Image 1 (cartoon, helix red, strand yellow):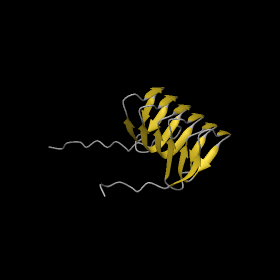
Image 2: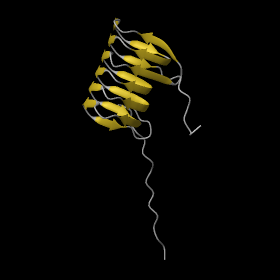
Image 3: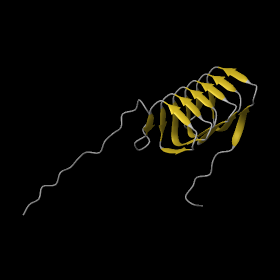
Length: 137
């Protein structure tokens, strides 16, 4: 309906009061209410959604297909498809996204970098060959 893909289910939770040190990889969905010091990666083999709640804090890079942030992130954020920044979102780092929804009150201290046709940072975008047509009268 309305040409929207169904979101994957949120199967993992790091609750408030929990603290994790180290990198974290996940599939499907992850809700973060605690804190993580390390990188968070939604594996690219399947659709992924990451929800960083108001009470959550991440120090490290964050990568997933769909990312919803209402907490704090200190590090780069890479949304392969959609990034939603809710009113209490605080990001210190560069942000890469295909689609962006930013609510009043959200803040980003870094560069906003829209992706051109799904190219992630560090990848080389292949540009189409330019062909010029000569007019023959």
